[in-house]
Length: 103
Image 1 (tube, rainbow, N blue to C red):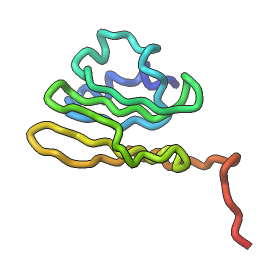
Image 2: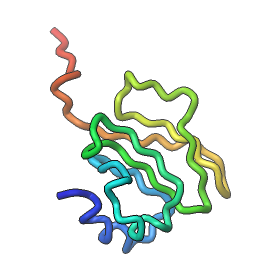
Image 3: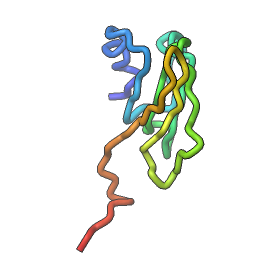
Image 4: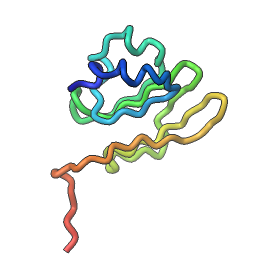
């Protein structure tokens, strides 16, 4: 099931920042659902599945300068707000296309 159809469950916890794996591109969301999360970053191969990071207006998100697309779903995000820190959004998936076999 699409994340946008389950977002209400997470919003009940009133998170300041969300890291969501298997997340659709934000253009597929009803803007009313994510209006409290204006700061967003999304990375994915297709518009149906990627990793989404959403933050309330009290936090600013910026893709870290050392982001490396070779590490497909390991997303370093520079977060600025009351505190500044680096957040790693990670989607630990079993990607058969890029799996490496050690022999």
